[in-house]
Image (cartoon, rainbow, N blue to C red; front, side, top):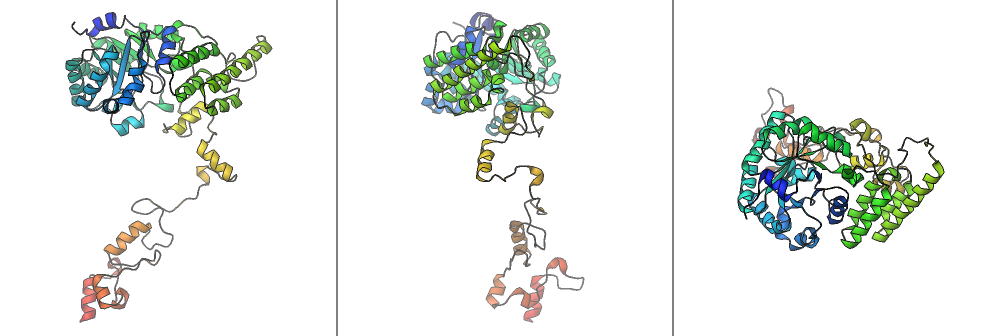
Length: 474
């Protein structure tokens, strides 16, 4: 049977899917995909898999795909990150019998992607991407798709999409943010970029970004003309998003935990999902937040979730429709969107996209210190992490490291050592007194020969060490 392409692939193989759950590392595992499908998702992606590891490690293949085969989990697209055409195709060949398409990740903006040279950090290497997609299109029995981020310029984004289509991409997901828009700098996704891409290509397009509820999905479909809408964070906070419902958190939490018992996954995945689902309630019940972080078993996590349910139900019975004084959402126990704070709200350093910055966002406070710093404060209650109170050091003129307090060259010890040796000059501040081979053979110090530093010599002074030694020996 010939391989289906473009709109035929989307309509027949994917069933004309319009509601799509994004590939999310450690978050779109089988149990979560099944939960999402029960509540309106029509297509799911696996978490991003590393192509090179997938090829060489049989256990990695078994844990991330082979053991997760489930008739209910279709249609399914497997996503890989890769930067080598041969490796990408080898991984795809090993996965193609367990999915409906292979997706190349060109959208990951994280620093790990920069270090590994994949994801959005390949978007300038068009020749490489053409070779990767063309080879996959020729070798695979299933279609190859791509997920990209946009360039700041709409025109360049359109040419980028057209290049991928020409190379053999059969479906394109466009995240309407640039690779610099991540963490607290995310901002709004540009649907204008997505709309321009949709008009410029002849293959199906999925939109990603700014999706928090079903109304957003419908508006995006209408405004951009895309074939489907993909959700990531919106889905994590409300798996019933595509149904247009906002059920009680415990309803979906209990359903998810039941699925995990049937289809086990690492406890860290489960914990992360519960933190997302109970996000707003955990701002109220901080003690239970700490318990959820500490429990070591699935049943322990289920017990914390049950306690959160009981407390919410008690609060519901007490309120009787009266709005509380806090600024938190009135019904914090209802699945609802989480709006990521902007740079001024979420972090002291607008450019920090690290785990530390994300911790501050999750806690909703810029005063929270990391766990490592909390441990240091337990050992030393007077310890402070205020950068304004840290001692300020004079910097080395050459490398920027702290310089020696008495160094005559205003350098650190390493740079001073190099200079003192190179110029056969002494630095009493660092105690660096060097002898040349000639001095050692003569058994005398340079100072006894009248050695002078070259930069201190006057117009009529000897030109350097060789002249001084020569005159002394004469």
